[in-house]
Amino acid sequence: MSRTFLTALVAGTLTALPAFAVEKTDVLTNYANIAAAKFADSVISAKTLDAAINAFLAAPSDETLETARLAWRAARVPYMQTEVYRFGNPIVDDWEGRVNAWPLDEGLIDYVDTAYGGATDENAFAALNVIANPTFTLSGTKVDATEISKTLLSDVLQEADGVEANVATGYHAIEFLLWGQDLNGTGTGAGARAWTDFATDDACTNGNCDRRADYLRTASALLVDELDFMAAQWIEGGAAREAVLADPAEGISMMLTGMGSLSYGELAGERMKLGVLLNDPEEEHDCFSDNTPYSHYYDGLGIQNVFLGHYTRIDGSVVTGAALKDLIAETDKGVADQLGQEINTSLAELGEIVTASENGMAYDMMLARDNAEGEEMILGAVDALVAQTRSIERAVAALDLQGVSVEGSDSLDAPDAVFE
Image (tube, rainbow, N blue to C red):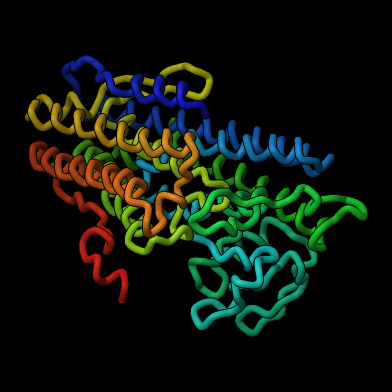
């Protein structure tokens, strides 16, 4: 993604839509319509990724691997804009871990560097390497993993032994297989897996190339299935849409819960401030590909989509309608205007991180202990996200809503606890 493109994109998000009188039901219907469009776009881009992966596996090379990697990056764009639908919507939050769980103990899936280590007290399967081991024992039961199936990944390996770090499915499992480990720490460079790890002949490197290909193929197909499932929840008659529309006040509370929790506990806290506190590149969200700045940016854009009731689809068409901003403005225009300005500011701060990464300072480099410039950029975005959360809470008060609880984070609320 070029700097010119990013500049145009950020600039395009800074103009608020004109205010108009709205009803809560109209706002919620538009909110559901935008969710339906975002998840439909996520399905479309995941199918494009799946096709690129299958083309790569049919003819492994540097070129086909790079095409698959670019398709993975593109697939993150619409998906990350859906994350604002988590938290306030239980149907989405209960499902989300199947497609975007992180961080993961990648040794569960495939070979890792020797410095990675082996099993730990916290995770006996941290270095299982199912690709190299077609049988293993889980909770005293022998598992036949000869066939790498969707059931094996989703029902057996995902959160195996009750450990959340055992992530076997979703975007990040696919990311690991496409890029491999990023062994550069806070230095330059992302993962650099060679295409030969998937070679079908004597060129195969690191063994088990056929099983590695089966795992990547299966994980990709499963991602499409999962996104298809969630897209169906938001169409007319879908369970998530019906839950939002059932009670107008509760539906608006869901919207603001999602905006506030993503802004504060998840993005500002767990995904950004924690990495700065620990100076740990393992806390980078898209840690194998160094795609993190874009994922953070599109999370922020997703928040603005909900506030303005406006989403631009991957084909360039627009879904728009009654906006939360205007509903808030009917009660307190000052709060609505301030929140809009603060969302613009947070997007600009997140955009600066993207621009810096495009100019050679990757996100994991920003996390280095002695990188004052990188720390300042990340914390500038954190501060902006915290500020907009405070205005989201003022909007909740202005609308006299009940049941809105913004998710917290130790990294923001009790930083000392992070080191305990």
